[in-house]
Image (cartoon, rainbow, N blue to C red; front, side, top):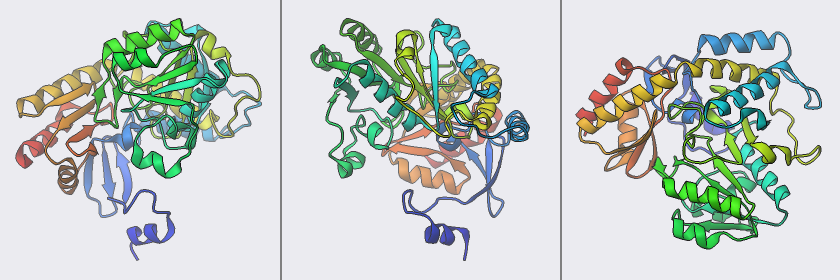
Length: 380
């Protein structure tokens, strides 16, 4: 019995039949059990920031595993405190007063958004939360309550009813806000909606209305944060958030998430208001510290490589949107193209029927991307 058969025999059917059985990875490539090599242009849903088997991450995990892998959160650990400080430094680099921020670590993006929902409701009990019909914030019940997609939402209703979904227009935003609003959740680039950038005027107006009505502006940077767009946070330069949620790219492949509270929003949590067993454990924080240090040296490369890749795709007749190394490429039949590319040794995702998404490891080079461009031109 092969590995796929064993998978189907032993695993719950949450993800469907596996497209590959991955044996190992190196750099920007993964290898299946037969030794076939694939260029990974999805980076484990954007989580493998530095690709596979990066020496800095491997060394950090080994070193920390020799010390302590886990401790109760009634204690502090050095990697945890260092990572929180690194996040404060990121904020300072992006125009915030980083020292005013406080961090809560968890294990994933959906958990980060769950924590942000609780902070919003501690800020304004029984308040309304505004979310966008085009947004995606996770699949656990709390995060699902602020995710509109009927196909994944309706089977689990009734969900918390204090959520108001609106279209991503300034008119809808202004009509929705009042004194009852506790928070609004937005993404500056909506990855699951097809790498769709949110209107800049909308984001700035959301900031203004949040201040006017004493609501929290929560910016979900789970897909876009930690260098993915060529800067630490995609919303920098548009508006200041009260809460920022991050995850995927922070750990470089190990499970970690965080909600960052800016200024007063960082002081809302109190002992007993929220908790986690494994969130912020020293092993994942050590890995994340290595990721942050390496990513700091890659930000300019992400911008230049992303701009080059966009230009090369445009030159071949493709419509492209996104920023840095988070790009959506318009095609006629995305699922079919995804399957064809996989057969040829290239991993991409298809979040919509007419778009493939590219979110490769941030270490990828023009040389490594060139064969993919040639394949795209040949297929289309």
